[in-house]
Length: 274
Image (cartoon, rainbow, N blue to C red; front, side, top):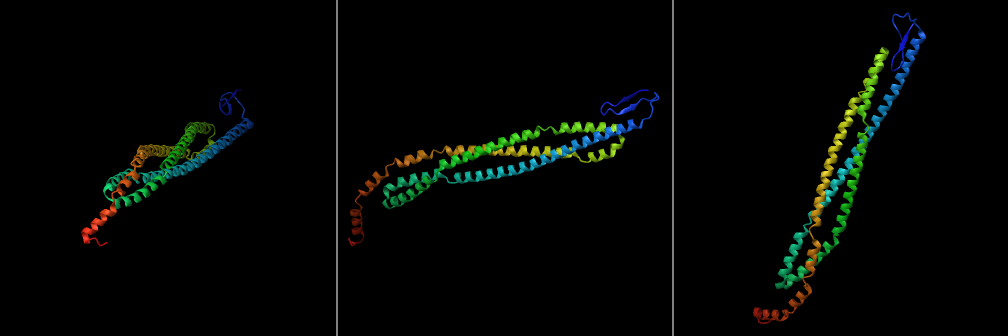
């Protein structure tokens, strides 16, 4: 008499032609081993499904956080557009032209001085340096968030689901060859369509990469626009205006003896009657 066993489950196998007797206990032991293997495989598949569900929840969280980042970028862009639209350089050039013209027109000089003082107060109250510092801090925070997202995506990619699913498929094939009676149960498991769900996750990861690239390009554009604003040297032009010594020039104009000139003009017009 002689008998052998299978390699994986060590199932009992009688050798044909050796008069090996039929033992019901051996057959029962074989089925017990097959059933035990099927239970372990069911547990492993349940664990895979649970982890896939967890990954799908993580994807939903990524979508919400990326939407928040995009909204934050739009808000920053609007604030920068407002700064650029103030056109401070043109307004300062206009003020310089008005000061030059004021030397020959006393009434115009007084109105220009009042207007210029109000406009300079407005410029001083804008506190551009503080607002630019705040914008730079917000951009730094956005870049840190991008780095954190990139690390979490690297972790997700490292799970190597394709390799683990390939191993599971090999085990399913081995189980099918060992026990024909399990075909029905395995058909049900194959209907779970795990490959399609993993492909969906991979497509979602690709979409995340595209959206993150767009955010990085937007950050670069915002940084360039801030550099342009910082290079306008507004402080130097305001210093030039302050150095023009307006008080001295007003004293000179007041010394023109306007009363005498106005009296002469009245005399010319109606004989001196005020």
